[in-house]
Length: 527
Image 1 (tube, helix red, strand yellow):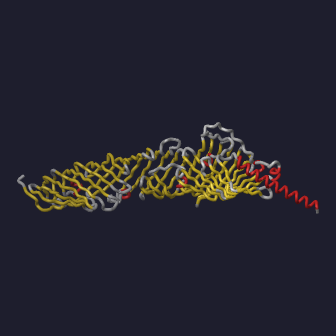
Image 2: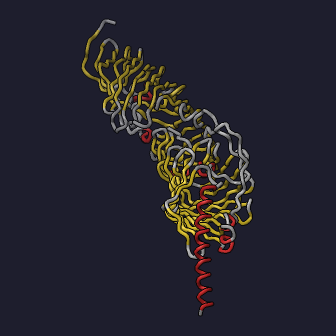
Image 3: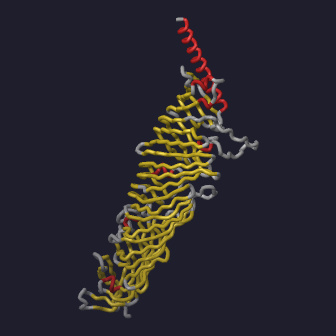
């Protein structure tokens, strides 16, 4: 009986001693840790019967005072006998578990992710910021496993918030200085899987993200100003990252779907395509979306401007084979006409430059039918400004200039033509050469077009009936053009037939011709 009691007392003393040694070892580890830059604080340390340690409310603060990690409960499993031998040491720890930790990171262009930059791992070369001599890194003696269970990661990336929940990870030090780690995390419908191998300051990371929100992927890039993506998903984002003496490098590729947002103020939807991206640039292999309901193709490169004082830069091309004019402005009532265009987006996000060319086979702006309208355009303060634009109308060239705001639908165009064939515009009721010019403005709503202008013809011939049975010489034809509520008309218009001057009105017909209405006799002359 006495021998058995002595054994029990001895065991109890050993356990008590071992637990105390483990607690003291944990305190020393936290005070002397050389894994992260900054400070580690805690509320309480408890030691279990077998020497295991529980650390309550562990907090990691970066050197600037920012909280980088909060752990309600961290547990460390230790080798019981190593702990008894002179208090053990970090080498006695076999496993560390972070339960429900919360990580807070900041990603800045040119600096990378601060959580990684603050790790003091073997082989890393840290830049001096305080002028003091760089102390050589001391390799850790820890050879166990670090586990993260049900963690949270909150990232501030270029001013945008990204979070990941349900993070689970493992990092083994068993082959130190080679470290192997794996992690999984999720955000809503997105699941992320990462694997990393780290050794002597270099790292290789591979992984993928399933059903990633495009807005989360774009959070690692600077603001593109005039290009905004508000929704969309990438079924699979392939992730490849590496670290060397020059820092971290990352490469992503994927095929986004259901993109929507704004392109220079114009709404786009149903976007899909493919891309490859790293920290320096994004290559859009192809991206097709509906802009104001019309299909547009976009491809090219966007430079991030990383490590330069420059904002993001563009080298993109875009094109559309069939774009209805009413998709540019509902106020453009041009008989369901369409245009095709192509262009380039260059410059930077702060000073973008858009230029291109356009063409339309057929436009009907009553009473003028225009064919082969073509020209150039540039982007100027939110407006598409036409340059060198002309069309074939009534047998001659018609020049077109002005601008269109595709966001508001506002437009302002000037049309002018010399040597217009009046017969083509009046179904042969009037023959002769006509000069005309008009200014037409409108808004982004139907029948908003208004305008004014002038027309004149010095001589010609007027046929009283469509059958051309009776006609007279025209010695003068002139008047003002008036456009209201999208309808063409005239005022103060006169036609001098022989020696008699008549008031007339010109009304746009159903499609191909203007209707001439001969009014009252205004005056007569001897000549």
